[in-house]
Image (cartoon, rainbow, N blue to C red; front, side, top):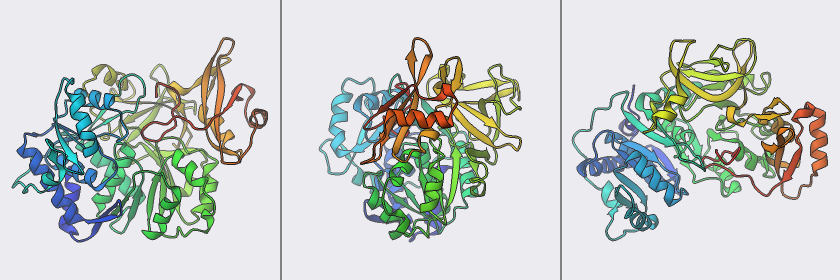
Length: 505
């Protein structure tokens, strides 16, 4: 096991002058990033951080965020990377929930945090990134701290990160991951993606999101190069990056693919360097796959499944994508997967069942929340030990390939039948005018729940409720056809970019 905080210094020792990062049009070598991270580690240790202490990194995707992630980890701390758009009320909750000792935040937000923190139960020390702010520790001063002579010894079961789930109501849960959890996933993903030192990984996913954090870690673990973007605000500028930087790997989610597929003229772009793209976070709408294949003609497409509580579970080899339609593959190396019914019996007949995970990638639990932990980490009579229950329904074919059905909480119960939202969405996405859609259950006095489709149209496109229902009637059983069709300007999304199913997401 390699502590994940060692990925950067090990790469800096092996390839010190190699470019490691491009962020905000500035380029950084491994040696420069490692030196700054060492300064961060030294300052934290000199100012009271001990192994296991939590540090909130409240920054956008940037070189400063990268430096702080590795600086905290090498000092033995636990990173809590928080989406930069998170409101102050939630920052307060996260700070107090994980008892953070430090917050590293933009200068523009430092004063707001200090003012809000007066009423908090906890007053962490604040480091300001950007222009100097009187009364705050400066990031620039922090990274100039002389390096320490020794660092804490990191054990496999030491805490490395707390990743908070993106609930919009109620309280978010802090998924607590150990160094061994993350390291085994990084190594496994590197193996099946065949990542190497010559790769150029383009990442638009937030580093506060497990999927985004893995892009950074896998890049530095292999000594490759990371092109780090804040998001997909300017899609055409993003497309230029593929050619300009000769990108070889790109991680996306359905919302990102929807944006890319809405762009015109991509068939004429040069994507010859792009070796692979991946999809996780949510199920890839099946109609997207042939559309992506027309654009990325020489690129391998990896469909994957994961959840924050274990980061990754399955992947589908690209050569299977056209023959095993809708599958997310089989369990990755070092992970054992099976399905169970509501009575805890193993499902072997192809019926839907809850995905159960056993392996070294499973979280320690939810931070300071034993009740929620006991609901997800439970004893299984199949293997006579405590394992992780995903909360996702899958089917499994005779050859062991898994097919996502729905989140268990998202299954619509209409007319006494169970409806998978993903199945209905896949049909609606076949309509040329559809940019994005979500299918949810709406309360109905007769049906229990009515199937409701909310649709965002492509610019300039037209579509009617009658056309949507007629198309669905051709391709779905009658009880799966949406009773309600609503055209909306946008769909609500989580901080990780996933389309929300309901207000509880």
